[in-house]
Length: 158
Image (spheres, helix red, strand yellow):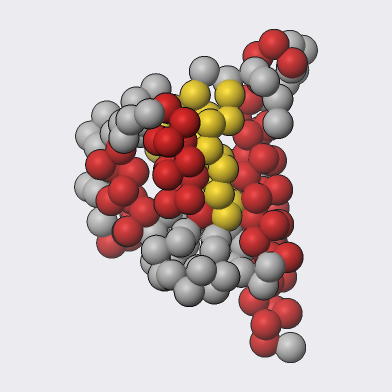
């Protein structure tokens, strides 16, 4: 984990959003290796990853143990407070309604996600769950994020 993205990745061509989404994909792969739905998340503040998480719902037998929830808890503990103002969440799949609600309460400033979730995603069911000032970017590395999910569920069906 880099100490600070901006001091370690100072080339003009580097894109912090891509870099941090790749970190979220690493988390998603960890989930898949544990036979969990492969969703990964990282929370970034001032160029530093301050929270990481991947799905642990099966491992912990806890329906609330989503990647975002794990990352929110880790970030809040590191910051010593419940608000994630001036932070960005990078997550491989669109947050569900539960996670969007938690992100709304955290007042996170920005959310960047990869693949849409038409069955459970917050944009379809609770588009106002986030804090009004939260900015959302969707579709970053969508193909890679979707492929991870599709491959996982294909293996489950085989």
